[in-house]
Image (cartoon, rainbow, N blue to C red; front, side, top):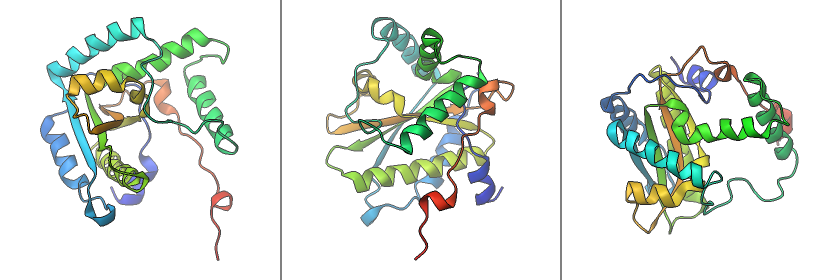
Length: 221
């Protein structure tokens, strides 16, 4: 698999099998992914790998939390800008509509939509998760560095025949996660990433989101 094939072939997975992912596989992926560029070579990323019995314990914890707080605890940053404008608003809307259409959930079926969203917090059945955090002293430039590091990870996961789903949704559970992972107070949780073997029979995994044409975002000078 070359780089182009990895980029074009990668997609977010929202239904996993229970087949485990060896820790050695994730360690190998992170060893390569750490070659990501960062301004001044700060390498501002921090990663927690969750699997095995700790993952099962965390799932039990989250099941209880969701029953009491289905909307989460609130995030420390805006996952999307307030008053999102077009074309970004329309793109987000269509992405959501296309996703729910794959599993036959109508827009007016709020209960079913909330139930599907809650599957984020069971990692869509994935046996392993990565959590990314960043030092609170870092700024927007360093957040973009973390994004490049995560892109490396996602492409390497795809190269190894695995699937993943980056999950900013975990930002609304930053307090619970911070306590469970024992994050230092000077660290801010960014997001999670579910990792595993995709259930390729699941309709939701057939979703491929649109991409804007070059003419919409490129200016040749």
